[in-house]
Length: 301
Image (cartoon, rainbow, N blue to C red; front, side, top):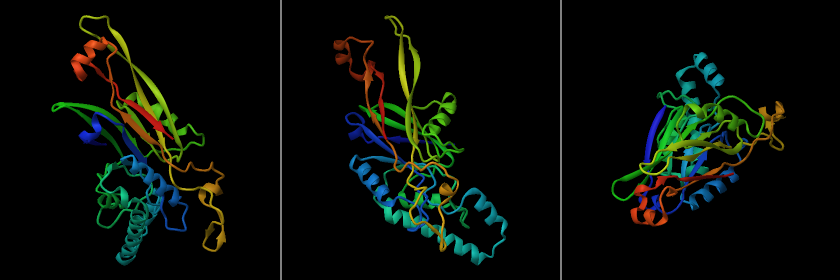
């Protein structure tokens, strides 16, 4: 697991919502593939207009699944054949960058890997090469990302994201939330993000924390935890789809699976303090110092 801390720019910290845009499950396999490229571009444009920071959920290209990579390793191919495979895998990565992701360069918190990528002869993966193109940190399998909001010269206040590509299946709309709800008791985070199931969904969990104030009566404070299924941009059903010259649907269509959700949620984090244990006059006089850090997290699907 990777741990990453990111200082939110000071111009954003104290005044306006910080927008986090999770993106994954693009599964780019070329222009004949099932990626909803126009939809992806529009989504990225909308996020950039809001000065979003991006988080990668994996499966950016659709080159090789885990079983495909296992078979390729067992094939004992010639070096020249491996070179051709590497070149094609990198071509897909560069195509996706040029056609959709280039405008986001420098605005990524990091990317986790998914199931679909290629192992290159250099020892890297295509996900790592994509990170190099995007000036992003490669976060491996899962990550904690701590966003640090600045107040004054010395005060730093956190919002923590827990990020994983995801695994397992689920046909219902709430499948990613069920997966996250099962693991949320074991991890301390404010927002849990998962991809893989190509379903956009969100739900709050409420955690109750006792606050023991010095002179006043103790109070219960409520902290909202957000669970987020991060959607995707790969269509399961494609009109006129061919395999070679044969009219034949994708594996989603062949297995009669539910259509994928096209799109991704946007997470907004608004810096806020709770002064409920102080009178209004006291809160004003003492500033943020004696308020309880209570950022508001909302998810737009």
